[in-house]
Length: 499
Ligand code: ADP
Image (cartoon, rainbow, N blue to C red):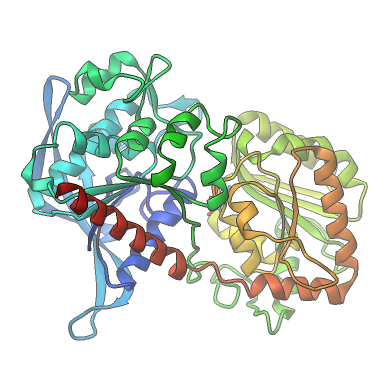
């Protein structure tokens, strides 16, 4: 199959969150399964030609937007898939195209500054979506399927079913739309409709209208051939009023085409046996290096390391979604217990202040770093004993999966992907990989942490739990196969519908 993978952020070129990790790893896993993958994204300021070995293709696209035609350049690079080529055993590279339109993408941030979103995001991403289709035509790429990701690519399915409906070039092209987080929808006022070059008939409750606004994510949900989200539980949750962010009705309508596929993780990046950021390496067969990592981590945070005192950690975007109101409520009670707390995060100002205050109040027990730091995030995964995710909702979550691999036991709220990947440890059967609670309340969170702290005192049980966790396999192997099956299903349905 010829697959075009379209995403607004991809590791290592640009990242704000988990979507970039997934977009960097899934195309490689698909290529390893023998599929023919091409990738496309905007050329942001971080996408440096020299650093990534990119070249201008010599080709430009003319993209209509509103009553104008705007030109962009197409750049090309490669992602090394690590897969063996079909020919002489050469390593096969995945082509990646970049839309180079400086007015839109050559900025310090991807979507907005800490003060808020860029005011022209509708224009930037409506343009990107039409540019994807125009690039296909210009480079002669006829995909069997375009795999779109999040609201920034939501207009691709809309265009294929409207403006490009009779375009023979795309007569065999289907779409799959993946929702990585329903909380971000690309909502804009109706007067931005002119940017789409579509008629007002599309601006209806059955189209992209949403309570008087234009909703680009909804476009992806309504017009794509199939929809996926990043865990089975989240695919169910988003069909309810509580988690549906106003789109539960639309999702229920499409429930026969809605699938949950759990994200994998890249064990080349996240593995305590090979991780280049760690002061010592370790394996589940020999955990001694983890103590070195704990000392190194606590040293960075200016805290004293003890084998008897467990370190509870958090690495996160500091946003309401992640359940920090619960953590704030229990902090005083938590700090009375024999435990240390470490946090790395950045996001909303109110949380920066909240956690900085906690750091000042408990200088010998709490270490707080506000910022985005990839190397430190690896050190935390290795050096901590427990990892906390009390999310209000969590489509998949990656950090609990990294934590498992590093023997850092997740304590999670059983929502979305956290529910699908973490099983409560059962001391009788000695199975399970972490601690999980359901009710969104600070008391339940605190009592679950206390259960974990009790078990930590029993070294043999804790060791067993760590070994269970480290033995889990959340590589892409399985999930990439699920995507391939889904692509096939979507393509076959399209062929059947033709006759
Ligand atoms: P989300 O996409 O909702 O932010 P995920 O758990 O799916 O949450 O993915 C978050 C990704 O971003 C992980 O790779 C995590 O390690 C990384 N991350 C989040 N905050 C930071 C930070 N402050 N410093 C370094 N990495 C971070």
